Image 1 (spheres, one colour):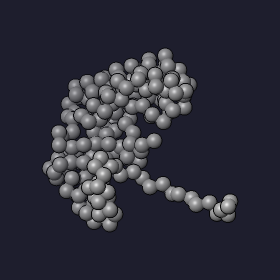
Image 2 (image 1 turned 90 degrees about the horizontal axis):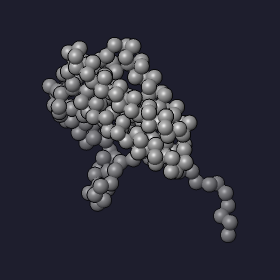
Image 3 (image 1 turned 45 degrees about the vertical axis):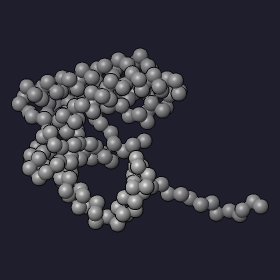
Image 4 (image 1 turned 135 degrees about the vertical axis):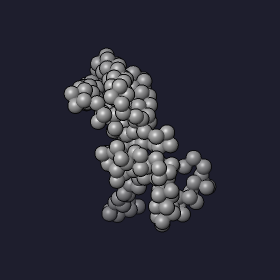
Length: 188
């Protein structure tokens, strides 16, 4: 499973708990929710929108996400479909409420995601990064693209990664997995 997760979006690892066919149906039922969650986090920033609305509303939204997760664990397609629709309306309500309260979306030249449970925002330039950091619960995770490129250039394995990407267009960087070598005799 990817370590990137949107709040209120579907944990696709849970969908794998069901049978192959019901997992596909559940994924189809939650597809529109994933789209709305991605749009809202692109507009407002990763993990930001629930913090801009009244506590009671944010709590109801969190409860709705938990109920969807439970429906997925129960492999209940009808409940999954219903709960996904509830969360779509929830995202729309959060968006409308935050807007009516005078909150503004994040600057357009920024990108947000949650990685390893921590929200990050990447800004094209310092001005946008400063604007986001002023309103962020995690200003330490607001980075500029030049800062990322500097860190990347200082990272020794970057030359290896760049060589792989040059020779294999479309290759992606994935977490390394430890390989265990059996400590037994070869059977021949």
